[in-house]
Length: 326
Image (cartoon, rainbow, N blue to C red; front, side, top):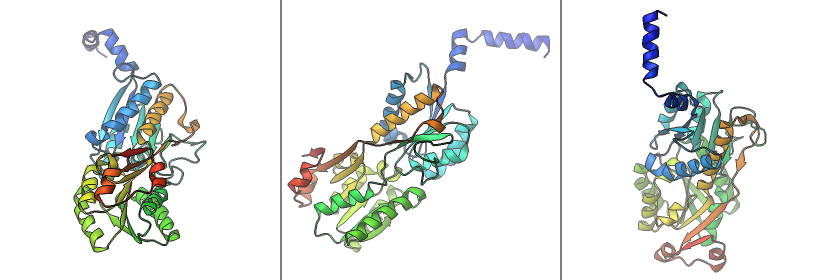
């Protein structure tokens, strides 16, 4: 290097305070990848940051986060994952199943910590739950595995129902196939006719409810995934407007006026994912961090909506609810 260039370089460095340069070089960066929109995903991102803080990492002080929100457009995720890899983030944290699959396809070296609703072994994310064995680990909220339970609860509320529908997003292929398999099996065991309906975005919801009317569906099990989580308010409004009893994984559904929800506490799962990211930042190997599984489940009934739909909730069912909205 020429002497003049060397002096110029030193001069440029001297313009940056020494403490700032040290912080910039020392602060790890977490890439946060989600299929959600930034508005709808903020509550889970906040839970994730709480988990980070429990591990001793405070955003802006000793860790930075680069957010990538796909705004419910799953096809954006591969490019976003590739961008995080290009930027050489320290860890990639993923929310939603399509996000972790995109991250896994983008890197085999950068640690990945996921929150997913499906079986991570069946998805091919880890070798087994106790010893993941690669660069991927995280938290499974078992959303798919409790799908049959949602159907069971809805049928318990509607014991004379014979025709049910299951709403899925076919673009979220891995999650949709797993959900369909579990709920179809449960429907057959109960002697129920089950129609699988598809929605790729909230724009499809009106057509779905036209199909529900045409098929004379008695009750609706809403699938899991970013499209349905992001469209809970619209789904709640449509179920009441069309008088369709429905159940969702997410407690925000009855909170928004829907009838029922049953599933894992998603916010707690994201908090645990934040804790795991903190452990990876401290040097633990994701290959040796067992996949955590949800242990906290919530059953919520909106009694006001039940009354509006002309449904009497049996006492044994309401007695098992964790929350009754009146």
